[in-house]
Structures are given as structure tokens and as C-alpha cells.
Amino acid sequence: MMQAGMDESGASALLQAGCGPILPAHDSTVPPLRQQIFECVRSHGQISRIDVAKHLSVSPASVTTIVSDLIAGGLLKEVEAPRDPGSRGRPPVALAVRPEAGYVVGIKLSDLVHTGVIIDFAGRPVAEARLHRPSLRTEVDLLVEEADELLTRMLAEAGMDRSAISAVGLGLPGIVDHFRGLILWSPILRGLEIPIARMMSERMGLPVQVDNDANVLTLAELWYGAGRRLPDFAVVTQEYGVGMGLVMNHRLYRGANSVGMELGHTKVQLDGALCRCGQRGCLEAYVSDYALVREASVALDLHRTESGSAQVILESLYDQAKAGNEAARTIFRRAGRFLAAGLANVINLFDPSLVILSGARMRYDYLYAEDVLKEVRELTLNKGRKLPRVEINAWGDLVWARGAATLALSAVTDARTSAEVVE
Ligand SMILES: [Zn+2]
Image (cartoon, rainbow, N blue to C red; front, side, top):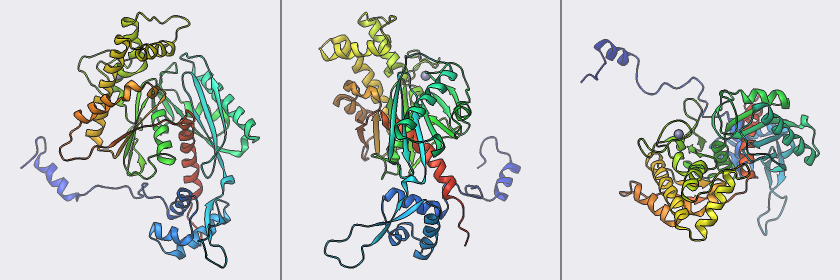
């Protein structure tokens, strides 16, 4: 049977063209062996040559050749492995990353406080800094200046020169085109389509990678957290808005336009509440800060004044809910029900093994109370399937910056390990 819209010549052209997915000549999802070996060592911390060969299912001889090259290049080193109790003779030799092979910076830009870390080549933090700022939507020039100030502070703390840094990773809220280094829109910035990676790079004199803050947090979970061993998991963040990052087959999913997953703007109510994106019925319009503040202003007569920021109103709403104010409780409970619908949609769509809830607002425990999680279970298709774990991430605020740093570390690692070995 012919499909609608397909004529006979179209059908035969399809037949002649073969079948099966047409993959690019170089499959970028499979890194060169040299990079695989390096990443195997970094992910294990310490591992012997023979275990690397077993882990990657390659011959010990090819591991030995490439490892010699990585050691000569200053990326790996030999270390004494822990000896089995009771064993004699020479201590076994393992491989580890040379931490001083390179340093990268991660910066998370936000409406109230910017955070930053410097990490070494083994991914360990060596310096950190915070920069508090007024909660205002700002011009990009000022944001670039603040990020550079944060970098200068970190370098001073670490006693390092700027020339020791290989790259910078940047995470911030909004719609970010990672590949083009553009901020299409951000709640903390004035203007649209801002080439922030280029601007930061010119100011700092370093290569800069940029991504959405939910994606950098997901990278942190993938590199350091609960997601290290999981092929598929989702991270849902609640900060200024509702963000999401998704890992599929151990990789961050970026989508065709690399703007990632806008869970906050999926619709939970047709013709519903007005969202700041201009559309109606978005999840964010029910659960984000500004949605809660909007409700609080009406129900509790809390008004945003010069001194009363959204943060102050939210805190007051939370305190009143804790103290038993029924109107305040209802606002959080309603937001929790919409969040439950959003989480159930994520589970129905992607079937992840774990959903991690993260972000500063997660301390409003009404949003993940037992009845919210019960609602998630009720809204998820559960016929014969195991529901994923839902975990609350209680990491400190520096985790975002560490995730941003892995953006830079990945790029530098790719560049420094992808060169083929000359034999
Ligand atoms: Zn929206």
C-alpha cells in the first residue's frame, strides 16, 4: 500500500536508495581508542593496563602502545596500586590521570549569585568563588565583566596565572544554543540572540563553551553524581524556571538545535495561566517562582515592593505555609500537583531509570512531599512497568559550576586525546 502523498516514482527512488539509517562517515559517538583509554582511566581513578584492555575489549598490546604515548604526552602517569593483603614482591602498577596536565574553569551565572570553580585534569576542584549581585535583569557587558571578576578571584585563590587555564565552561538559565554559543533568551539578560561565548572568550582570552544551566547540572550528575553508572536518567531543575536535562546512553541529549529540553514550557493546561514565554498553560506558569509569587500576591496580600524581591515573597509564603496558613499551603500543594503532572509526562515519554529533582527551590519541601510523589505514580502509565526512582539532590550550589567546568574539560580532553598515535 502506498502512503498518502508518495507517488510511484518516489517509492521506487526510496527502494533504489537502499535502507537503514544513513550514518555519517565518521561516527562521532565512538571516540578514538586513545580517547577511550584516557577516559577509562579517568573514570576509574586508578586502573591497571590489563584492566583497561579488559574493560574496552581491546588487546593489551594496543593499550600498552597508546598508554606509553599518553604518558609521554603528560596526560597519564603510573602510580603504585594498593597491594592485595599478604601478597609479596613488587607493588602492582596502575595508571592515573596527571591532575596538573591542565586546568579548566566552570562558572554558573545566576540572578542572585554567580559561582565558579577551577578543576584539574582529573576533575578535582582546586579553587572556588562566589560573587553576589543585585537581582536585576542585566546588560550582557556587565555579566561578562562579573564573570571575569569571578575568574580573577579564583585565580588569586589558587595562586595561578590565567595562562594555566585551558578553557572555560559557562552555564546560565534560559534558552541556549550550545553549538553556536548563543543565548537566545535568558531571564537574567536583556536582549536576544547574544553571542555570549564569543564575548566571554574575548574578555577572558580563553576558549568558552556555554550551555543551559539544567544541562550543566545534568553533566555534574553524569560526571560526579548518581548518574555515573546509569545509561538513561533525567534531571529536573527548579530554579528561576523549570529546566530539564536528559542523558541517553551515557550522553547528554541536546536535540537538533542544541537548545535541549524545555520541560517548563510543555503544556499542562490548554488556554491556562500566562507564561513569561508569552504562551499559555506552560508548566512553568504554575510552579516557578514567579507563578508562586503571583499567587502569593493575590492570596496573602504580599506585594512586591522596592525592597521585597520575589525571593523575599517566596520565603514569606513558605514560612506561612509551615506555620499552618491554609491559603499558603494550598498554593504550594497546587504547584506540587502540576509538578507531578510534569514529572509523570517525563517518565511516560522517556522511561528513565532515575529522575533527579534539583535546584534551590527544592528546599520548599511541599514540592516533593509524599503526596506529590504519589500523584506522580498515579499519573504515570504503570501497567506492568517498574517506575523510576525519584531522588532529591541536596548538593550545594557549587555543583552547577562543577558541571559547567566539565563542559570545558570535555572539550579540552577531546582535543588533547583524539590525535591518532604515530607508530
Ligand atoms: Zn512558557
